[in-house]
Amino acid sequence: MTDGSLRPPKQKRSQESLERVLEASTRLLEENGFDAFTIQDVSQRADVSVGAIYARFGQVNEWLMQTL
Image 1: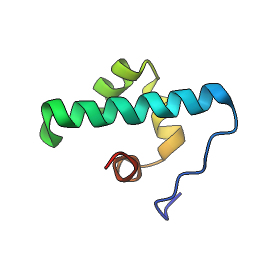
Image 2: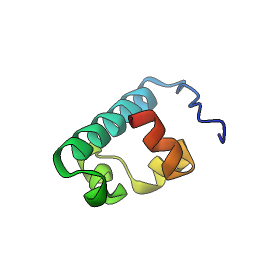
Image 3: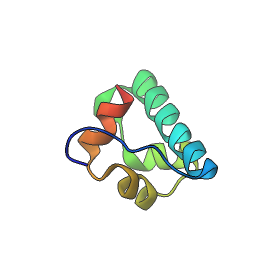
């Protein structure tokens, strides 16, 4: 996934997890700014493991591109 595109999840629960991660990311960036942004905070707020975030997005910059 180095082209910045995110393939859509096939399962409903995966889609729900993705939506929670993106929503949590957006909210945390709005609330705390980029300097205070952590994967652990997103993981806790979205109720998704850190490993699941990395498995879905690969690299943090790909994840942030989807958030922004």
